[in-house]
Length: 182
Image 1 (cartoon, helix red, strand yellow):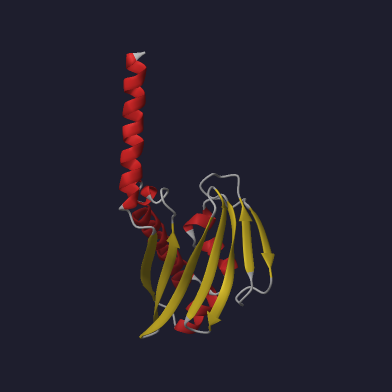
Image 2 (cartoon, rainbow, N blue to C red):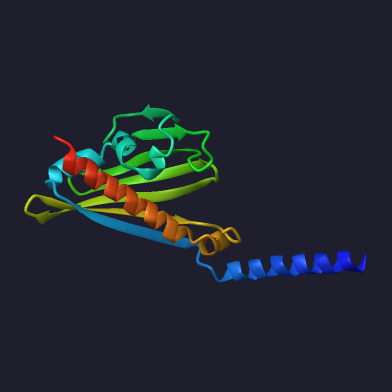
């Protein structure tokens, strides 16, 4: 019986430590990555504003090519929704909606996750002409995690992992656009 009490006390102490640590971990995070693509801005922007094109470069979308997809609205315009549902646990289910398009400059997207976790994130892609037919693309992602779940930001280094996935997707985008005849 004494050993059981000690085990319970240790477990309680560990839970308390995690909960206290979560008080000091940020809840909001922003990730921004960018790449320069050897294509003129109009070509690049026309491609990235079409959410269906993410099938060709977005690491998360490409993780399950067989997932169910549903589309509502006109791709490339505010109000277009790209919904997905995958049996792959790392892909899950949710939808992305174009909330604003500033032609030639920026596309804003709200991502609503259903599985493997519920949440809403804001995302954007910006394009800037950098000269000589080259375009810089910046992909930003803003979200938050409520206490005490925010501890996972620190434990699993989620910002670092998500940043790496964004950069990988941008590298895919660069490869697609620099080898694609338009």
